[in-house]
Image (cartoon, rainbow, N blue to C red; front, top):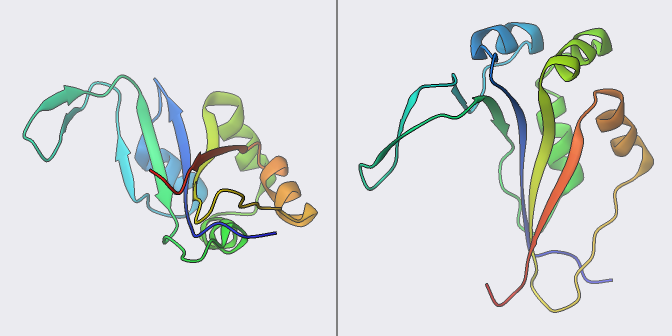
Length: 136
C-alpha cells in the first residue's frame, strides 16, 4: 500500500471557559498557539476577528513522508500521562487530534497500531483526519 506523502498533526483542546494557562499547567507543556474566548485574532491580511471559543493547540512538526505515529508520540511525549488529568480536561472541553494527510498518488493509505489508538482513547482524544488529494 502506498503511504501518504506528508502529514501534519495538532492536538486541539477547545471550550468557551478554557483558560490556556490552566491547561498548560495541567498538561505540563506550553501550547504552540492559544486563545481565550473573545480574544481579538489578527491574520496576515490585517483583518481582525473575535475568537468564538477558547483554544489550546500543540502542533507536531510536519513529516515528509507521513509519520503520524511519530507525530502522536511527539505530542503525547510532551504532556502528562496522568489519565485523571486527561479525564478532567475531556469532561470539560472538546479534545481532538486534527491530522492532515496529503496524498502523493490516487491511492494512499494509513494504519495506526493499537498502542497509539489506545493512548489516544485513554486520554479521550478524538482522532480527526483530513485527507487531501494529490491534485490539491
